[in-house]
Length: 88
Image (cartoon, rainbow, N blue to C red; front, side, top):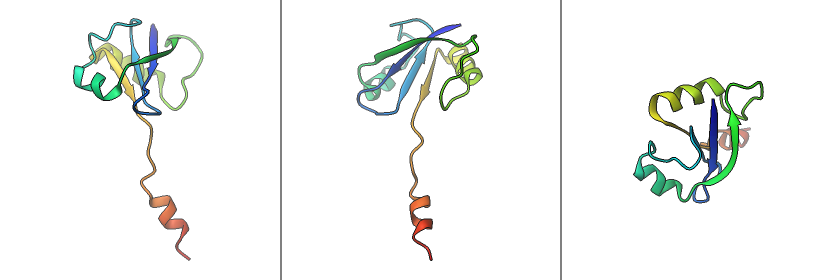
């Protein structure tokens, strides 16, 4: 299964995975408004041997099959690590 991967200019670290290049019909309009104009990063074969960085290919395949897209958002620092490093 091929998918198209797009990055967001508005939300750094956010990526949108869809089944067909430039076909955003399954993506809710409100999501696209917040995501901004998608910029194509690459086409990726989810059935191939190559792994995706930071996410599971099977989860991406399942989400694309069930809802038509997969949204990857960056994990944000909740400040806990920084607060723990200050404790002596």
